Amino acid sequence: MQSSSHRWWWYGVYVAVLVAFGATLYMASKRIEYSWRWERIPQYLVSDEGTELKAPYDGFVSVADDGKSLTLKELKGGRHETISGFDDLLVGDGDLVFQNDPVARKRGLVAGPLTLGLWMTLKLSAVALVFAMLLGLVAGLGRVSRNPAAYALATSYVELIRGTPLLVQIFIFYFFFGTVLKLSAFTAGVAALAVFTGAYIAEIMRAGIEAIPRGQMEAARSLGMSVPQAMRHVVLPQAFKKTLPPLAGQFINLIKDSSLVSVMALTDLTKAGREVVASTFSPFEVWFTVAVMYLLLTGTLSVLVRRLEKRLAHD
Amino acid sequence: MTEPVSAVAPEVLIDVRDVGKTFANGVVGLKNVSLQVRRGEVVCIIGPSGSGKSTLLRTLNALETITCGEIHVLGQSVHASKADLNRLRTHVGMVFQSFNLFPHKTVLQNLMLAPRVVAGVGEPEARRRAEQLLAKVGLADKAAAHPGQLSGGQQQRVAIARALAMQPDIMLFDEPTSALDPEKVNEVLDVMQVLAREGMTMCVVTHEMGFARAVAHRVVFMEAGEIVYQDAPQRFFDAPDNERLRGFLGQVLK
Ligand SMILES: Nc1ncnc2c1ncn2[C@@H]1O[C@H](COP(=O)(O)OP(=O)(O)OP(=O)(O)O)[C@@H](O)[C@H]1O
Ligand SMILES: [Mg+2]
Image (cartoon, rainbow over all chains, first blue to last red):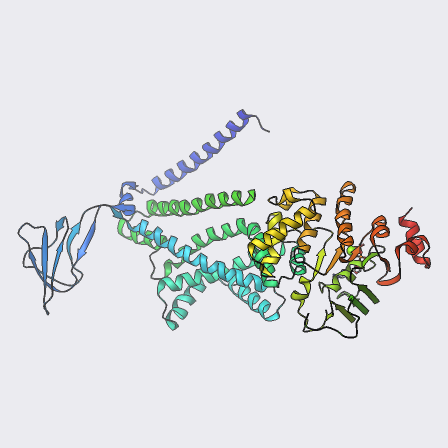
């Protein structure tokens, strides 16, 4: 045990190092005469731009007398559509508008591009995780299987994926499988991430299964259980508990790895960051913000997993 | 059983003939072993460490393969390629030296699992059976406990009850008391003795000579993978007609 005054001293050192580091960064950015514009960032998280209402087809606008609704008369056809419930009118009476032109705006707060990117990253990772777990479980069982075909297939899969860079795999999924199988960018992204992460989960599963004493399988078999029954009821539940910490690490990796799919036509958090940088010319602020947003995601996940671990440890 | 063998008298539940076992690494586990066990018989197997006692026991329910010979259990050829091992094993309970209870399940769930998933017994019936067996081994109050919360002796009694929950015709015990503190040995042996009195067919690998003498109908001595001598307990212990057994007994009973 260290005395508490010692502890406080070391916390002081910790803070001092952080402050020194921050100051160095600040001075360095001063030297290149970078003007920090943090005030520009919030609008990319939450914007008050509201939502634009768009013209469903080409046509002429006629605005109601009270200005609270407008009617769009189709240019080549007989459709009439009335649009109401907006706050600002963006067109005038008699204007010709084309399909998808904004005609009016509803005020209010909406998610900015960075928040939308964060949501996409979360969605991408969560869907990929589900498939990665399934793939990893199957391949992990193959890795401990005594069936030569299952073992060879699982081993080839794991070696192939772990031996090539994720970015290359993403290109292959996007350009090759994406074209051949006509996958959307989202599907291709999920597939690439799931296949990649599945290989690592397979090895985690293998280690988890092998960590369960042989006597467990033997006891289950001696009671008449088949191998799949013994796996399902006896070995896997115990292995799962053992693999939870490395699995959580893998999920966190998955979230971070998902930033690589920003090379596809998919606006995840990283891609959103790039787009915001292009429109603000404030790369430093944007990338720090993006980093913090990733950290929020992974940090929350760590906390959740730690709680789950504690709960499982009790029984 | 799907394949009753007519050559064997019906009351012979275990019939081991000329069995040999060589492990993948070349070690000889069993040599020319033959052994018959009749219904209701209690056979104790003793012998020095590494003599093949566990190997023999584990070939009886095919946890271990054999290299040559033939084993029939309950009239079914155990090592035939088309043997339905899962079905056979439901009739042959096994108790291990290291208990091998399922640590993620409660005591009651340990007893109910195999009847539920293997035998397809309904939940109320499985529970009733489990509670009855726990009472029988004196652990009715531990139904909700996890194995990790029990003493070694209690865990082994649960393991016996778990095997019995499948209502087996034969029980195999591999040194069931060797991992226990000395003061916990008797509570397990007592349960086994009750089973023996009820007429269970049992093969027991043990170092407990007192138990073998009191409970066994026959005692088998193994050495270097062979059955060297077998006899009724009284003659086996008091006047064995075998030099190597006398040497072994002289050592362990000293
Ligand atoms: N899986 C295995 N692979 C190789 N050799 C083995 C294996 N299992 C057992 N053996 C060897 O076979 C021989 C018989 O082992 P067995 O476990 O049957 O002995 P035992 O009589 O049960 O001994 P103990 O009293 O120590 O339990 C020993 O020499 C052992 O080392
Ligand atoms: Mg042994």
